[in-house]
Length: 308
Image 1: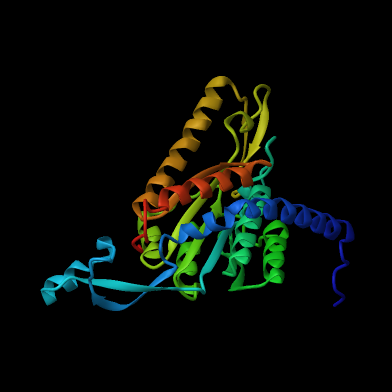
Image 2: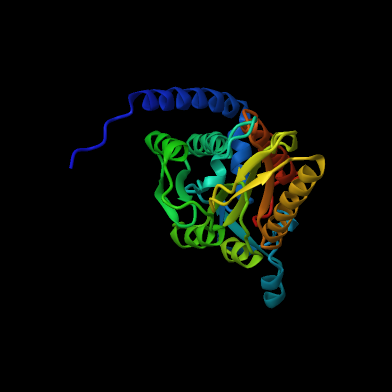
């Protein structure tokens, strides 16, 4: 069987986009954003390396009270830095991620976010991996540390065609927990149009850090303002005629808010972090602001912070 013809225009467009993303992201990383990304590990970059007796020069916040109670002497836990950290991207490529809006598709914004996170990991010499999913797992790229890995990751996020159309977030979280080679920082990038349970999130966060980046159109971009249109569910194929009156728009937005609120509650109850990011060219900027704010919150007032 002959191999399919190479789509030269598509390849050239992809290369141009990746070059543009690299330039934009590298400018952000040069401003110190790489350190902000690193802070998301919440101390997981530190590994316990034993105990020793407390001295007055030590930080009292590091005292291990259970050990101190057993020995009748104050002891503190000593940590060493883990150099080999893993960033794992879970990217939803289901049909709903490709629904066009004036601000752009969620899939396009997901590519931008993946570029920032993958290149930040590369900048910090962390390993980065990728899991693409829809109803089932569509692609797995084990974590490694190289520029070629980051570029391969971006190509797959941008152009991998899914075989399935729906979304199973719980299965993606479960598989990520099994495949991650060690404690990892896991980003779930999705429009979160499917359900997720706190139980599935908690099973993952017992060992890993989880940050959910929820992509959504701006309210003004969700539906046309007037006229009768046919609306198709991208994941089920069901079509319905709709006249988007003000009442219809309000009902639609309320339904989306309820779905998002339920998912957000499940993620936070399970120990994950949730970030709302609008589709469009400013998705990278919004994520960069979150990383910077998160780094400032995580920074201790003085001395060494207590590992999580």
